[in-house]
Image 1 (tube, one colour):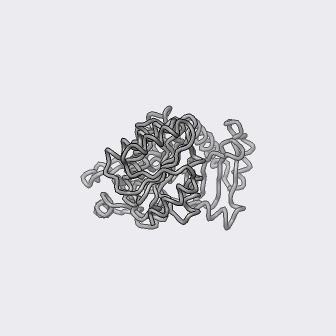
Image 2: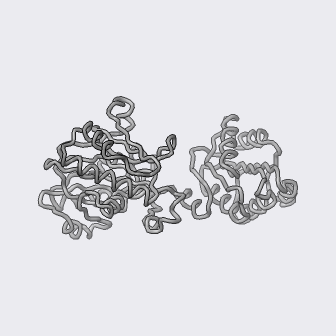
Image 3: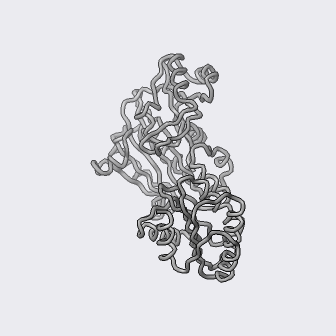
Length: 387
């Protein structure tokens, strides 16, 4: 789960990390209160709040010198969609604008904490090339990427931080500030179950202070059950609506660009199903795993979810019954078809636990559902029907 920049900065503040004061604008009449909440003597930076990077490249970040410029910026963005190289062609809705106090910048760095799956620990990445796409830096100037690893979720040693600070050309005062930032970001990362914490840029101000100019936070979805306060900050408008709806029913769903809807139980089987559709020159419209303990109700919701995608021209259901019973899957399919106006071909492959009973239910339903025993035949059939 992603947080908006202003939400990430609020978390930073609660962990004593240096961030800019800001005011939030959700409607044009909020401008005066937002200005009053910051030092506006030299202007401010207005920032569109959306779950995407690259906002500045498309005009979503602007230096504003007076109230009129803020109002023009807010009027031009609120209620519109921002489209960047990180969004699709539709973009993301802009419902909030943040205005931040100005910071006198001497230089920019990059800093992030990530889950290092290879070494089973939290790793910190730092670079003197701040304000840039870190992937580009890693590709073109890998020597500028510096790393520290928090083995067994404990703090790195002061010696390690001192050595890193030396490579970053910090003076003694900046080194002490950096130690505090490292300690507190790691504490935040672990206590709030984050999967990513990024500060880009982490700046050195003209007075020589370290300052978190930007903030990006991703929270581990699997840990949200113990992060109720953060969960309450979720902004569904920034997520794919079908993916968001799927989460409400404990379904694993990812939208894709094709026209063949897939409903499968098990992530590996789902990927194999999509590969087989591609083998026959078809294009999957989604990844959808109903899980190993799928219920009739969950299957019904999954079916409705697939059919809510107007690009779907056909559906392939591929269920291998282990824990899940194929007859319950069949009941869910029948119930969903009877409830929704379905006008696309449906091919169903049932194998395993109670599969014969499931096939009987489908065959006696009177519905236009084609059954296949083989995944290869089922995939080939749905591709042919869609084409």
